[in-house]
Length: 315
DNA sequence: CGTTTCAGGCGTCATGTATA
DNA sequence: TATACATGACGCCTGAAACG
Image (cartoon, rainbow, N blue to C red; front, top):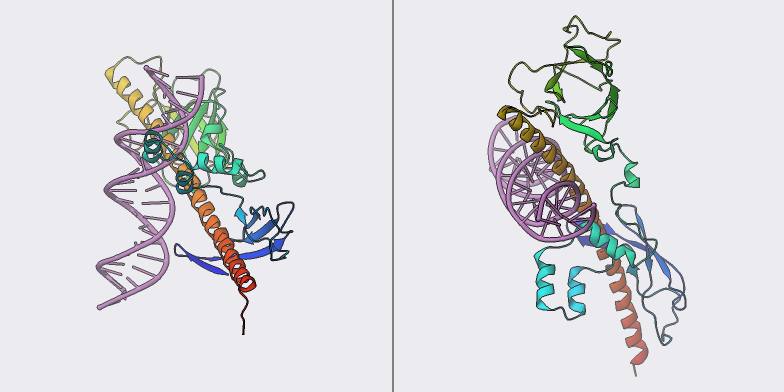
């Protein structure tokens, strides 16, 4: 069976496995994405059907329960509540979780950690970083309290490619430059980011490092130098100031900028996650459409059979 | 082959919602 | 009540497909 739905060809195959009565039958519905959906029979025939069909007659998708429309059509909702419902839909996660809570064994959208993603490194799951910064090339730098710097590359999935490094002079920082190292995947050109204390981390080009206070740059790893900012902020770079040491209006402005960048970064990640959930929600809706098509077809067939039985031809 | 159209993704803003 | 989070809306960008 094929169902055309929203520019996407749905191919659904149904494998019946159960009895029409007694315990709810379970049907496997093969979705076009290769995903198999377990559906459950919902018709609880109070009287034995005329048709002694071993196959279940109706199915209900297990991944989704009701939509807003069906919810509205069920009971009488007072106008105020209705307005509230119409004013803003609940989140996709909430909808899906509420729906799936009706049917045990139905996968829910996890709160944060999704198994399918294999618990990717996430900014939100970092070891309580004191600060999060964004480099001029889009990388995110999280500086934990133990002196550990975590770098996440802006991959397709947001924060994949998280890397951790430790400052070499986590003890008493000497005045001047500090070298930090990390195994970057690809660092083309100079990039800069900033760390707390109004210092700048500059990726050095080859050996243009500060001659003193320098740790040995080993191998091909790029080196980063922490030093006081000398010029205006590069584009897309966040200046970090110690929260407790704000004096001048410039520092206040820098703190405001840092907060804004942090907020934007969080919202960026939230938007990505929201879109991912929305896609999942739409997938579930499409699955439900496929299952309801199957259900509709079976009901039509049953109706035709009943018609034949109740009104036999009298030739 | 250049242009146009369209779909999908992303970043940002505004605002509703949940929670401490 | 303040804060963080979630999400709709908007504009922009990019890649693919259609078209002349």
